[in-house]
Length: 123
Image 1 (cartoon, one colour):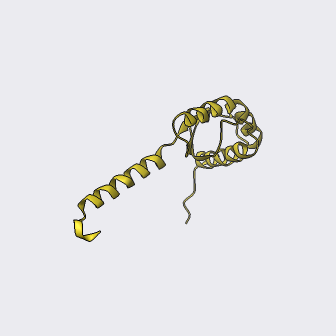
Image 2: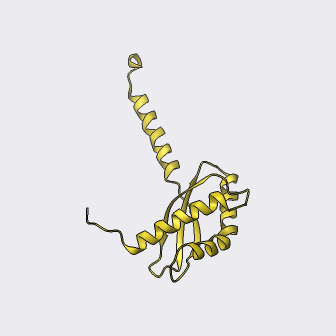
Image 3: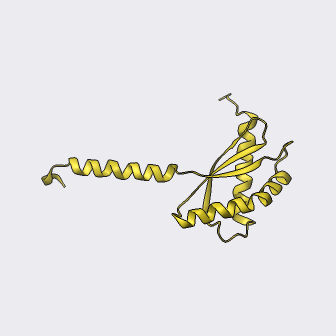
């Protein structure tokens, strides 16, 4: 397996790992509860990073989590600058990753379709 990851991939993963640890252990904002960081995408110049996160919260709670992350982005950026050795510490842009919700919705639709196709006597 000689295929190597690009430097950008390694830096993105390091940022994701450090952010996850910071949010879990050092972030004191009560709005930011249980979230999972799913990915980090860096621009080629490392000036900006899209941080994708997922949560089980819905509606207003999702908005509060987003507000808390935006509010904490300066602190998180400063800490990333201290922990990950890169020339430019990227500005953090948090994006709610809806992949899990979409997968659950599609799964329910498939189950519903399969159930409606089942003849009445085979349940």
